[in-house]
Length: 78
Image (cartoon, rainbow, N blue to C red; front, side, top):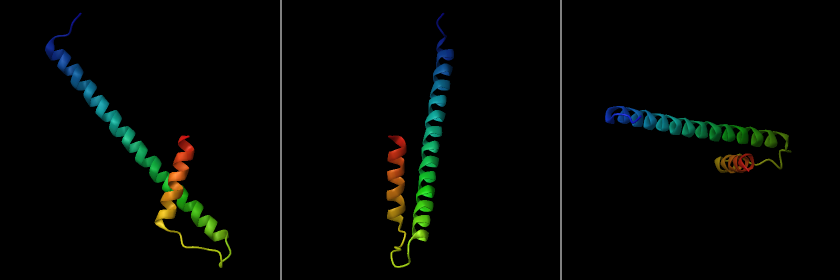
């Protein structure tokens, strides 16, 4: 049984809305995962620095945190 044009338009709009919601949810989840990796990387670097001797300790930089977060993300996704 074929749908009337109005019903088909409503089904199409519902599908588009659901696709948009799913895409937004996926993007939101990706951001949450990325932030979690940054938090984890920061904690790892802080703990590593804390356990080093004062003479060997280096500053923790944003690039070090993001680099480790990228490595962690690559590892998790492999």
